[in-house]
Image (cartoon, rainbow, N blue to C red; front, side, top):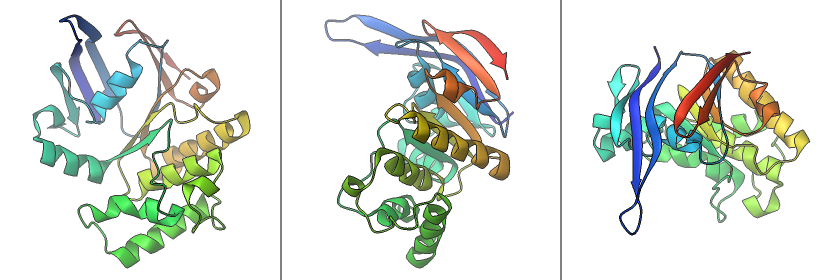
Length: 228
């Protein structure tokens, strides 16, 4: 099993002492090479679960194993290094740095732990952006790109370190139908051609139609699973 989440609880302490239980004993198993959609209404816990599985947030209780490694037991620096090397993230908001070009934004993850030298990273970033149809946008800054172009740059940034798994949180939430289709075809291609495991939190049935398995959440619990 590639990713295992066991008995995951997430409790938020609110101002005034109130506790909100976002996840209530989630158990989930993800096989290598799956393309999974996490679905559910707002507040169901899908983004919280995605963030915990990806090591962005930590569970209040339970454990997350990625290739047998319990990321919940990793110290912050170890976890940051593990994420950078093994996990890619794509969000609804692209979070590109406005002062850098598309090419420079894609290069950034390679420089944290020096997995490749700058020249190699630059060539790799250029290659990815060309494959994503952005060969004429390499030196454009985010403000000069359309929403769909910005999200493609974000995808290139997510995959430049050749991650084993991508977690995407509403990656098409700000896109029109044409760009949504383009982005999902990119994800599908990465999944099928590179065997990258992809987990997408979405409320969009069209996005979910690209997934091999749908995990539906409600009130912090898994309600059902559907195989496409």
